[in-house]
Length: 208
Image: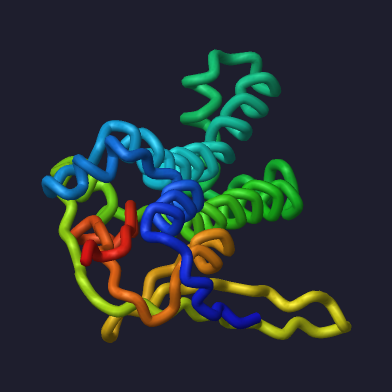
């Protein structure tokens, strides 16, 4: 796929970019002043919170489930069932003797599986984005932009995975297909970025 210039007007390019990257004229005005708009904050906070919340609940899930199962089996309150479960984890030999090896496998296996998954999800938590949102400032980068497409070929004849980027100087920023198509290749742009995470929040053609 190529991205040849179509010589659209500046207002048309800006409108297409705003639609592709979901920023409003008011948000762009705030970005020009070095500020993150409220709409942009609301749109980005989920990118930090969702993996954080998923990590928390996945890590907590085996303790809650086994605590509840143990409490039901022992006919004790949940808090007591959770304490019994934690005690079983520290005395696996005794658990194997009383309930069998499969009881150890089920408990330890489910716990490790959830913790591994939680670790993978935790890797997606961007604390750089968190501090960017907390500070609420935006920096601007000016330069000539080249839109690029990368393809990852998949086996068995499946469709390739396509990823789109905007290259400016030595930096690269991932974008969606709509933003890739909206760019006039080789033209000068102003990119509005969060300083720590490098999150692209808006872009506009440089005024002449």
